[in-house]
Length: 274
Image (cartoon, rainbow, N blue to C red; front, side, top):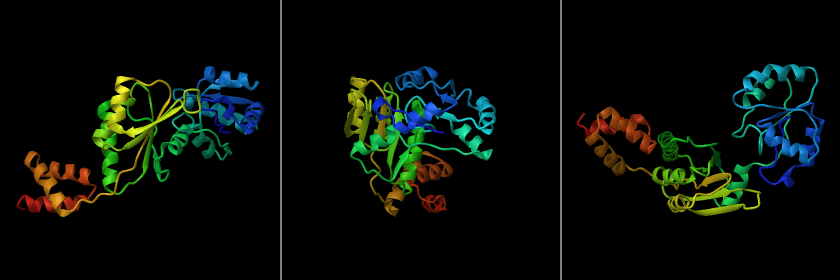
């Protein structure tokens, strides 16, 4: 059974979750030291062992054998709903492939809580886990999203981020996606919980000067509707053709506009004189 745990406030633990953990023969934990505090608080005495990215594959055979014997196994992460930016997906997939049942309980999730607190459109939304930690990879990821937006994607974007990287990530969001409205949820459900709203560039400067602490969830407003007319396309292509080969210019403008490659290529040929 997949059992969500509080993301900060132990009062968010449900009675069903406590009962399920007490009834388990084994609890799989992302970090047994973190989960031990929860188990002690609720007087849960079931045996626990670690399951994380480095040992998940090795646990699968053991878990399948136990399930076939009728034993009850619970999976929790350090905080929130299992599998959401946490280990467990490979195990769940293996259990399902073996024809064994998987059950889950509803519970806390930082991404959804940050979304409804953000003041930004609640749906559709796109949860993206953690952005790449290195700037080059992060900007490449954002550029891919921007291309998808130019092709029609309209969704509020949600990431988890480390507090020491949030300023850099916000600066990249402002540069690549545009200086749109964002909300930064910090320490959600905990004593010093706050949601800070504003433009991406302004919050990037704020956090660069005064780095935040605690768990961070970033919510970014969806792109505004926009159109690329023929004049805009010609302008982009002429600039790209002046600096790049035809092939490279077409690739760059296709990525920038989200238009079909054949359309961009045909127009580039026309501008280049055939």
